[in-house]
Length: 338
Image 1 (spheres, helix red, strand yellow):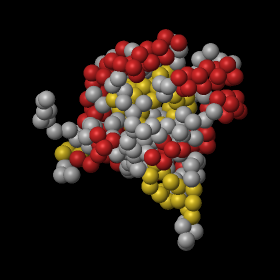
Image 2 (image 1 turned 120 degrees about the vertical axis):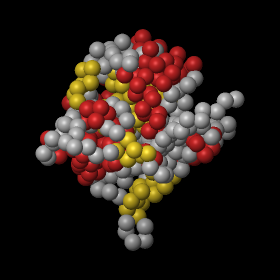
Image 3 (image 1 turned 90 degrees about the horizontal axis):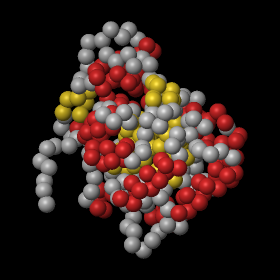
Image 4 (image 1 turned 30 degrees about the horizontal axis):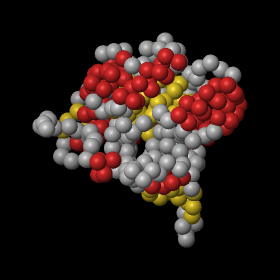
């Protein structure tokens, strides 16, 4: 047993220090960037990804967010036929969506069915997604996926430490997904005692990934536009968002109205009892590690995106960064009381 006594930080523990800037208007700030992936593909766009939760990782979300140059990680529970229909009907969106899969045999069976029906040898973007990316079993599956799809952009996770980021990159990941227990409806830290404060995880893992010409995606903990700005300032190349998009018109799931006619969406973690019962994976040896909470209807996701992008531009202008990708070089965090 050992104790790391160095303090680790979450978004709430810091603020960004303003600096003298030559930027005259927020509209000068460029939020999009060009990504050159280790697998050889080049992509230009905005590094925001809707989470592959079954409420937010929807076809409708992909269509709306693509208008902003952002991406969606489609949830795992669409059928192969549904996925083929979406890709065929929206060929322009193929570079704005991740096909998500886990490491169960049914995930690979469905992927093979999809590839045969879609008549393609390789999807452009793949998200290999599990809660615990530290197992040898997961690393083995990542290596096999890279061997089978040498040119695909693969995002893999989740992990929160630099050594495991390096392991996943060297095993084939272009993007490593960072986060453990920081999600709005995630209760992993309460149930297991395991986790890592998200801001420190981003800073430490970004350093490891960038040294190998790879990228990281911060997954979890974004509760405001300010948190999004802090994640990018800390070194995240992509940021995955779930709860802020929950309740928008593009979400799937159970919508209902209260006695006053106000619409709500049931928003739940993918390790919650609700999700496990819905998708028939509630094994007796598993504990619920997620909550289900009502989220008030927010209207179209475009409104949420405009608020987020406005906050990012304002942050960059305060810190003197003309491009969002330059924000980490311009950023100085100051420690505040929690």
